[in-house]
Length: 190
Image 1 (cartoon, rainbow, N blue to C red):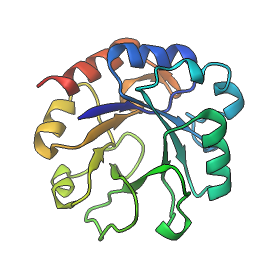
Image 2: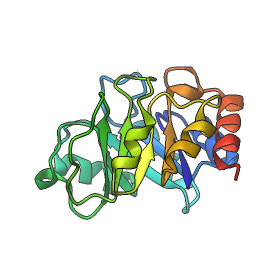
Image 3: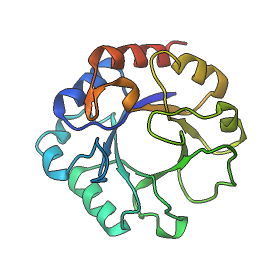
Image 4: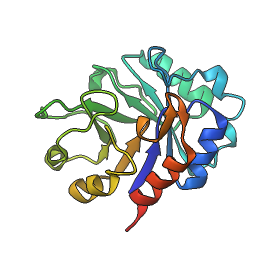
C-alpha cells in the first residue's frame, strides 16, 4: 500500500511529504481548485524529486493533448482524471487513474486504467467505505481522510493506496507538516 499527498503547490511541501514517506504526490492542473498548480511554478524544482516518487497530474475534463503536453514537460508518471472522461478519450502513453465521486451507490466501472480513485461526494467528505469492496480493480481511497480516520479506513477497505489533500492542510494548497507525518505514519503502520 502507498500514500499519495495531493494538492502539492510548492517545493517545501513536496519534499516534506517525501521525507515523511509519501510514495506519490499529486499536482492539480485545474484552475478552479484552491490547490491548483501550474507547470511554470513546478518546473524549476519537480525534477529534484526522487525517481521512486510517483508524480501524478490531476485533471478535470482536460484534453488528452494538454495532458500529454504537461506530463511530458514535467515528466509526470500518472494522469488522474477527475471529470466525466470516458475511456475513449484517455490520454495514451501514460498511466491513468480514474477518479469517481461516490454519492451513495457505485455504477459499474470500466476502462483501460490502472486504478480507480474513490473520492467523497465533496471536498473533505468521506463516503461509505463498504462500497470500496465492490470494486474489482485496484482502489485508491480518498475523500475526507485524516490522521484520525486513516487506520479505520485502511482496515475496512484494504486499498491499493490512500490519498489525502485537505486532511493534512493548514490552508488550501499549504500542508501542515505535523499532520502529514501523522497521516503517513498511521497509514503505513502494519
